[in-house]
Image (cartoon, rainbow, N blue to C red; front, side):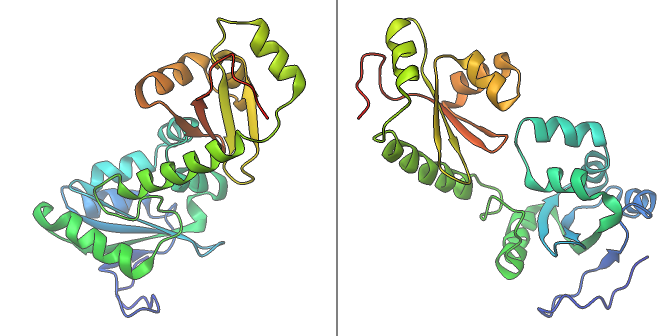
Length: 228
């Protein structure tokens, strides 16, 4: 179940390791109740990992072990680790408690382990902030704006010019940077497979949506703009 001599190849020994996260989930709850610390999920198939922290590890793990919770979060495109747990299953993950520590130094210690392990599943590279996420947004936005200079489908141009009340939406594929242009939020939501009301709220609140492999924003160009 657990081994304090687990070799992680960079001279950091976890306080405890659960080598089968599925088999020992109830022990995970019990041993981490009312504790604060840093944890690491390890995918035994891909060797990728995720590092996180919580002032209440017991509550945090109760979320991780809820399939309904994971599915809701994946639907909102909020976490790579949730998607990986659903895809590969808990039995293909090990779970390390890297350190128990006081809440006052939690972020500092999480950053230490992020720097050491450089976990692939972590989008945010700065503990306790959106700095890494904002950098990613900025990079995607620059690519999106650059790609808007490319030629768009003629049929899409006609639809936009015919419907002056439409709200043009751009959807950029996060992997290929391919741009798709839609005439409405509803049309975009149908394409990526999410609820259009939820997408509308995201665009109204955050001015963008990231999920389902796409970066979605309202088109910066107005309906009378020419695409070249």
